[in-house]
Image 1 (tube, helix red, strand yellow):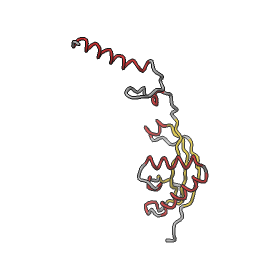
Image 2: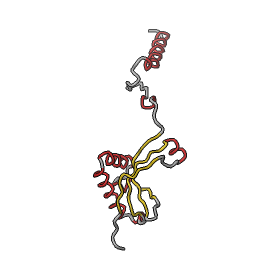
Image 3: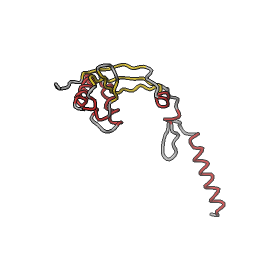
Image 4: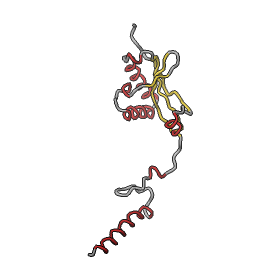
Amino acid sequence: MTSRRLAAVASLALCGAVLEPLVRDPDDDGFPLSTYPMFAAPRSAEVTLAHAQGATRDGRVRPLSPAQLDTGEVMQAFTTLQRAVAAGPEARAALCAAIAGRVAGDAALGDVAEIRIVSATHDAIGFVARGAPALREAVLVRCDVARGAP
């Protein structure tokens, strides 16, 4: 095969590969050419997520780290929270009590008197770009942090 024919075949193959997503099912996401369907569908700008927070006696909210959910990984902490919320009131209460126990032993969180597991709805873009507060919040469960006598 001459180099000119080889170039023509290669060009046709590349053009076919580029045009192939036009004729296949848009939800068919496969190797080697992805249509990235997760980015192609319209999505709401609002996102609702659960998170745990500490509250002081005077009502100030203290953020909690993944360590209070017994992990060093943010995504594991997130998954733990989402699973407990989905599992219902008993699982939420058990997780809240476990977090309260870990917070009670953390001197850096000595002012935290209560743990809350909260469901918050955010404008995702406003939250990430400007730190906008939640649009809506609902406390799903709360529990006291029991500390020993000083």
